[in-house]
Image 1 (cartoon, helix red, strand yellow):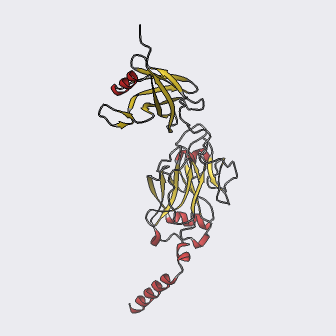
Image 2 (cartoon, one colour):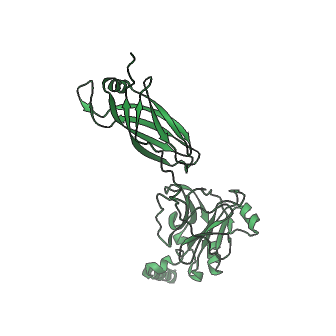
Image 3 (cartoon, rainbow, N blue to C red):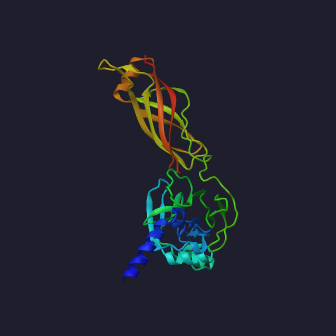
Length: 324
């Protein structure tokens, strides 16, 4: 018993004396390597996440640094789900060395492979982050796709950013740690493909346009021209608010910006429409007492992509001509 105690004590001292980098090298070289979101036909049941560890025998994935897992996050860094991963399975893959495949049964069937373990968490289609985790949930390596607003912080090999893979394609990490879109390679070496911007700004919704204009109030409503850009997806939907351009004297004897009215609108992409804005009581009084009222029209709108944009324009309100 005494010899056993001495041996255990010596082992503990040796473990403590190891450099931090060497101790971590038993699990932390694992890298997020590839992700597929859907088949060529758009079937999201055909999906997989692949990890790769080139550490060989050095990577033993000991229980000390476990449990190990896969965590999925959305574009804002909010965790959507997670699953445990087999330490022994990952160790065998590192020894091979070969990629470690976490896949659905549909993906296995589609590619004629057998995944190392089933993928049980969902992958967001438009933007997401798939991360290898250790130490009970700490992200060590991630592969991301799409427009990410808050990247998950990693403690190991880092995070690799790429575009959303088209149906039937996958996002694959390259030797320089860039991510390219190519034909899927489950359980095989990654291919070079197309490097597309992770967040394409060219097609983003730019908001509606409100040209400078003078409108005549009719029946208590101001018809404001609003234009939906041709590149918008579907329709422009939102709310138009009219406020005085400058502080004006109110009934209370104080000067302030006055809300003149508001209205909702829906306009097809590439089209223009006059949005009839019902005036508030204060708005009607201002127009009735002045030949013209300078206003700012502010639209808060979105298109089919869900992207919201706020835009403004100068509008002059004229009171209707008096009847003889």
